[in-house]
Length: 312
Image (cartoon, rainbow, N blue to C red; front, top):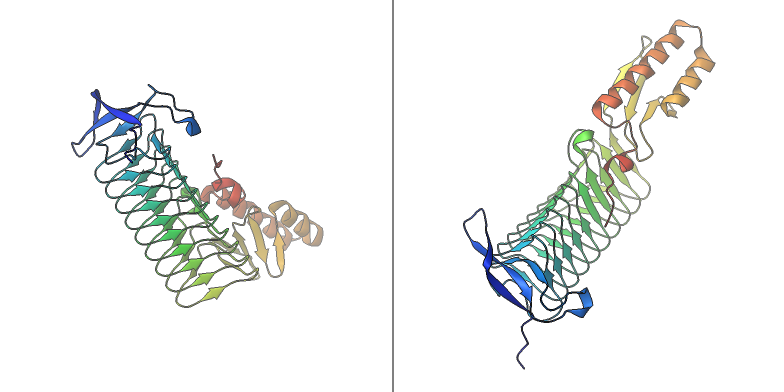
């Protein structure tokens, strides 16, 4: 049985890619009721009918571009200013939009979403209900699947897997990008963020967090409710008592001995316990200094709030 074509190429409405390829705007030949496209509606740009299936309800909208040997099919949607090219495939009920780029031999499938300025390339796979967004990049032979999110400035590459309900995120405001690489696995409801790096054959899972400038590598396992962090800023009082401030999902916290304080809690504690003494004055000065440095380093907000983007 021959499938009735659902679109035609408009030869008079073209764009030229940066590689010199000519793409043609598509026009619906028949209604696609499932996605609200009527006969005669204009879509995005493809290089040929080999880029967008005539079966199913897959569609390319707006200024989106699909070209080279890329293939969009099933119920997938590519829209806004997204590009899909190379030998990439977008299928299932996946969406690629914003200014996202999917290329190489990458695959985006299931009900996954890739958007913002995100990149998925190489032989990477994004599937299930996964989200890759912001300026994140998933590449190499990496896989992101299940209900995992990779966002901000994060990088997942090599043969790494991020899955379950894990979150990997990072921001230029927090001194670099979170990275998961090698054959590392991050899963469960684990969090890797800030400028942390998980690599080698390391495992981070269950409710564990790895953040700040921490590195977990080799064959290490971090799990349960463990917290592994790289302390970003330290200051030492004249009696050699050290104050450390580090980003956390609830906001920056000062750690000093067994103390774990917000800035206001720290001021209240040292005013109450050492108020009017030289060490008290010095402690308050160090708290002021660490708060100022946290602001400069960009983690005065809660890490999760600073990096989270609205999931569309």
